[in-house]
Length: 131
Image 1: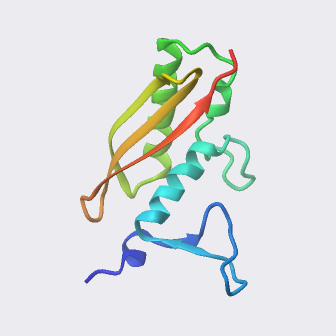
Image 2: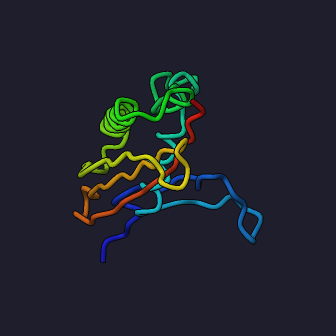
Image 3: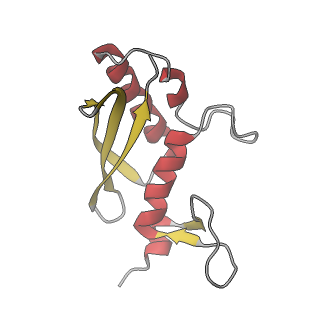
């Protein structure tokens, strides 16, 4: 049996949290990859001092209209950021669509394959547009 921490790495969990023993919780395996994707998507370029290009820049779409053009730009930005910052995955598809329950919201679903095990995964998030 292969140790997932060796395949995918180990880091502090995100969001940071404290366990019952009073120590910081760690993230490893597939969960570590999922958390990394979320960190990349939620970080603005320029936010990290030592990695000024790190992140996705989704915040620049917050005041854009919820149009097909905006959805396509979001899709391309997610694709670019994940291709650059998360080498442990192969992107299979990125679906960006208007949330049917809230026309100001955009649902982003990322379908990916873990490179080390060829296991298919997905992660999703919602981005609220204010325009």
